[in-house]
Length: 490
Ligand SMILES: [Zn+2]
Image 1 (spheres, helix red, strand yellow):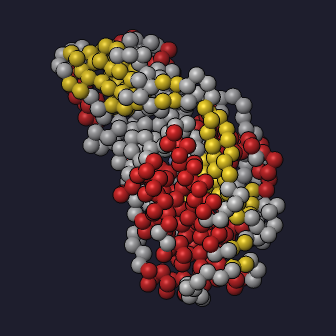
Image 2 (cartoon, protein in one colour; image 1 turned 90 degrees about the vertical axis):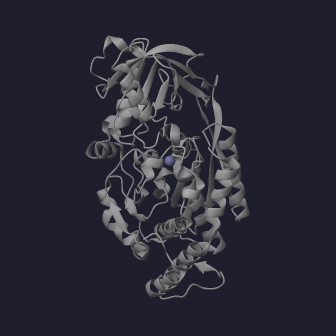
Image 3 (cartoon, rainbow, N blue to C red; image 1 turned 120 degrees about the vertical axis):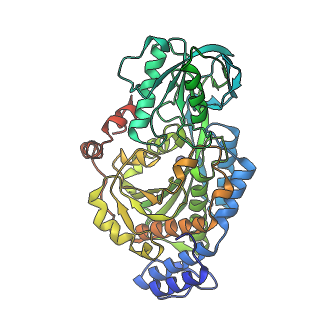
């Protein structure tokens, strides 16, 4: 259901929690079950009637725009988040610095066919891929869908811009692993550039840096499906030459980055629940749905809990990461910097799948958490967000916590057209439904409140052998090896 009329909400809040939404915001303390239910009713009521997330998101997307990790825009986004937290009364809000190495500047990328005809091409660079060191004129070779990163490559790839089909531009394990392996193989074979055929409609292009960071082995380009088809029609009649100029550059050394952290301190701060989202994005558009909208909802959840003067039993920590799009760099830095207090974390709730209709929570293979989780998210039943999903992936900052055994969740949503818009020119503000921003705010604030006030943890932290077993059971072991080539976090 996309529309959520206010009247329906009032009735729903009344029927579930036995309380009307109050017209003012008196203190809400932990304690009796009634008081807790009253707290939830107030949280949901305020979330569903506030426009805070929408107005923050408009500022983030229209005033700052795309936010590549390490860029001035990413810095401005961190400043904006910190200011909003301070304005909401979080005196403990602060930056936590780390470095990325290297930084990357996204320069213009142009390409045109110069023989047998002259024609411009729709293309864009992947992140953390090198440029071409000035304009180059090279032949086009086509390996279609035959490149898997292991099978031998034809000799024609040497010196060529090589067209490759990798299947869906989604975030599947196979897709990113194949992209990574094939790029290395093409670079070793002397290819001039890798042209990945975009599977998006309407000449839309894609970008990513997952398993390309810290440095792609050759220029890696997204080319529109229509333009690839054009090149293939020309190739059917004879050789094709293009001029390519990709002007990306890397920093000479490390570049500073920051996460933003604020605590709603609990009565007993020896345990905590984390609510997290990432504020870095790609720059083809505004990074609205990935992941600006969820930054806005986590921020609004924080503001509402603070405004309602809620003091949970245990601390609720709000963490806004940068560096997600490269390789969960912000959350990895967080885990390293907070290694001593990982045992204190009851649960991490990350949200990075877009603000479509919320369904419930993904458990990342932790079936041992399932029974307790079902109980703790039962207050979300009237919002339609009380389902649990046990599958796992490495799509976002959850990964950094999953691999150190911390109970890790993400908000599961209807996919709708998320993967069409993902990392493209149409990830823009006006495509975000403000009603969904309110609903997500309600769900996130409620789940954090529920887990922070629960008598028991939903489950325990896994030991390193148990994490290894979890990765094997969820089919993520090989991707884990690629994603953590050096020191393992466990
Ligand atoms: Zn994201």
